Amino acid sequence: MSSTPPVPGPVIEQDDTERPSSRTRARGGPSTRLGRFLAALAVPIATAVAMGWTFEWLRTTDAARSVVVAVALALGVVGMFVLFWGMDLVVNQLGERGKLLVRPWVFIGPALLLLGVFLVYPTVYTVLISFQDARSVEWVGMDNFRFLVTDPGMLRGIRNTLVWVLLVPSAAVAVGLAVAVLADRLHRGESLAKSMIFLPMAVSFVGASVVWSLIYDFRPFGNQTGLLNGLWVAMGNDPVAWLSWAPWNNLLLMVIMIWMQTGFAMVILSAAIKAVPEEILEAARIDGANEFQVFFRVVVPTVMTSIVVVTTAITINVLKIFDIVYVTTGGRAETEVIPERMVQWFFTRGHFGRGAAIAVIMFLAVIPVMLVNVRRFRAEEQIR
Image (cartoon, rainbow, N blue to C red; front, side, top):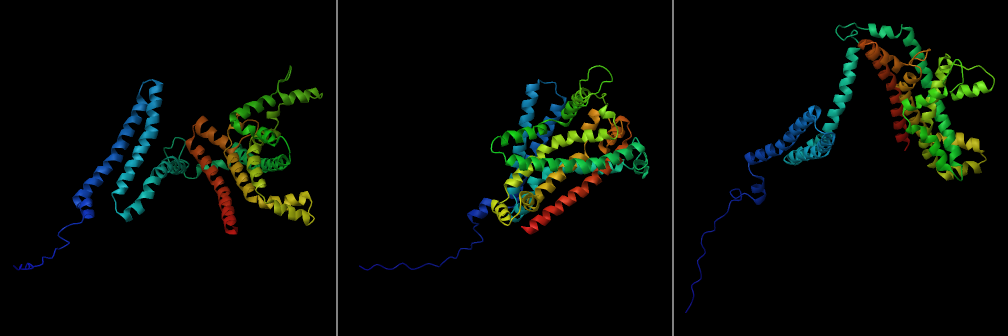
């Protein structure tokens, strides 16, 4: 009995285009992708609305302080986490090219927004106010800036600020560098010595001004409570009103700033000095250089970048110094400085135009300092 072989039927070719792959089915059609994108977009939008409503509630609520603190922490931590998670969810719905282009801006966007709101907008608005009158109603052109170069108090403020900029950073960096070198040579007590020098950095400018006001205190009769006058009278001299002794009172105020900034300079420069390779120092000594030559011709050029950075930071602090002058003398006895004049005209005398013009001058004065610092950094990077 023989079996008949099966007759092959017609071959039916399958068209791949008619049966979508599992990857295509997972993605879905355009309507599905749009729905997922809108659903993901709803998460950050809803979170932002909820955060805005919560912030408004915190601003107007009469709830207990503990409740307000708890809600504020939740708003700042949980709310921001959900907001960024939602934005990342939206980015994931885009294509590969869209993810690469959009994701960096999503995460840096809030920082740029805050920077624009709290830095760029006030700067532009201040420049506009500087060309207006006392109440920012009418435009007065360059009148406010002409006032800056004609008012005697403002001219003294500019002169005193220039002296501050020249003396305070130089003295603070010089003393800080000397202390850093000497402290590094201590076999014992280096940490204690540096801590004592750095301690004034923990004090606010207002607190330091109050302390030094007690040191400079003057009484026309009776016992002197100020330390400096106590020593001066003990030497057989008459008491001196130090803070009214123009122009030397400006130097006495600079001492406060130098006292506070020396610790900062010492810490930065001490770390830079410790990073100088010992082989270079030993090679200089073998070549016959003494310690002074090693310091000024090897150590100082090596740490020059750190010196520039510290000098720049202290210079910027000096350009905006206000607390010391305001607490000690209030700008009297020819101790005016530019920031003190700005506060006086803007807040005390209520002339917004002149106060804003002084602020613009301060802003322009900081720009060259920053440019010098940036150029120094670029030169160092090219050398490396």
